[in-house]
Image (cartoon, rainbow, N blue to C red; front, side, top):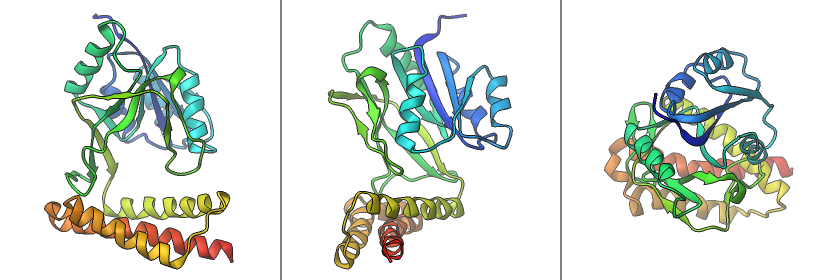
Amino acid sequence: MADKSPLSVVILTKNEAARIAACLDTVQWADDVLVVDDESTDETIRVAESLGARVLRRKMDVEGRHRNWAYAQTPHEWVLSLDADERVTPELAQELQRLLSQGEPPYETYAIPRRNYIGDRWIRHGGWYPSAQLKLFKKSVFRWEETTVHPRAISDRAWGVLQHDLLHYSYRDRDDFVRKQDRHTTLEAQKWLMDGRRVTLGKALWRTLDRFVRSYVLKQGFRDGGMGLWVAWMGGKYQWSSYVKYVRARR
């Protein structure tokens, strides 16, 4: 058996028994695979352990804090951060192995382009692709903002961008998209309140329209047909729903 790459893959899970195996199958070349599970009630842990992953249990409190804790549990300095709905393509796996086998890489953090899917539909436009995110890094120079929703990646180092894509099966279908957006807009409104942010009606209306126009027109979401229109509409609705929940919470 060929030597495995000196890399820790960290995967966060919560009731992902149906998807974790497909994710783990794509990272068997890594020396260390760690699943950090948020109190799953399905077979996630059993499936992960059966495929050779280490499993640690920790209840999710704040997403950024949860991720930072997970990275601190790895034996390797280099970390590839994944979610259970992401898949490493064979081409990306080869690129990662080459990068880590040729001495010290030129950068300490790397963004990876992602193909985002709704169901089996790859959303190619509207700002959804390449949608590169910092996924590969030295843990000593990288951390996540410790906030409840959409934490920012924090690093003072220049980063590189890898060539090959990560597959991201973001949403099982449109209903799944709607459910997740409802949860995220609730967290967004709470974040605004905790930050002491003042969001006016005018600002909310502008953000709603701006999000739609940027997605559908400026970033050519129209090229995805009816799905592109729906995605742009939901992007605008995200802003409006967050504002409505923010106003209700203030009252």
